[in-house]
Length: 185
Image (cartoon, rainbow, N blue to C red; front, top):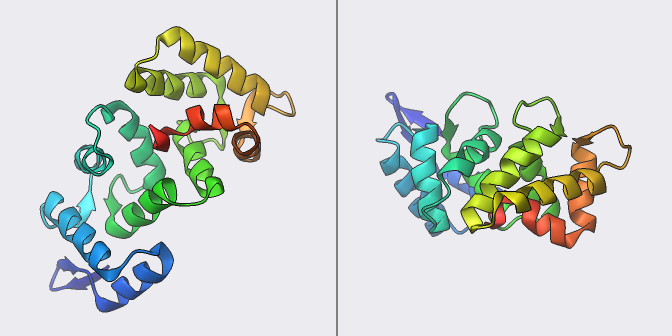
């Protein structure tokens, strides 16, 4: 993002890059940027609370607040505690319109709560509990999905899921993948 006299602006160069990398039209990018800019009180950096409101509005669902904490963490590529428009746009498009591979890469980041590059059973259970709560399934279903996910995807049986195991598991098990993907809620 450009910076003019301490204020952030969306430059023509920014727009060109975003068009090429996102597949969105200039009009769509400018519209989203204007909303993002407005919702960030013109700072062009969105904190977790602002993100929760903005993301829920775009997804047209109001009950996503608990899962958006984890989605925010995955979108915050530079781990600054805020996201800028580019981070938001790339991540949102990848999780909304990207390939299955891209969606599952971001999904892995959501599940890897402690950022240690593996998904432990307790992390999977926490995210699946949130997903079940959002879609109205009982906690017992989350427990069943957690056990099934860990048993099915853990090909080397080390009781954790590597990024490769998680992505490959999602790519090969459509039913679990649909449920495991927090962006399809």
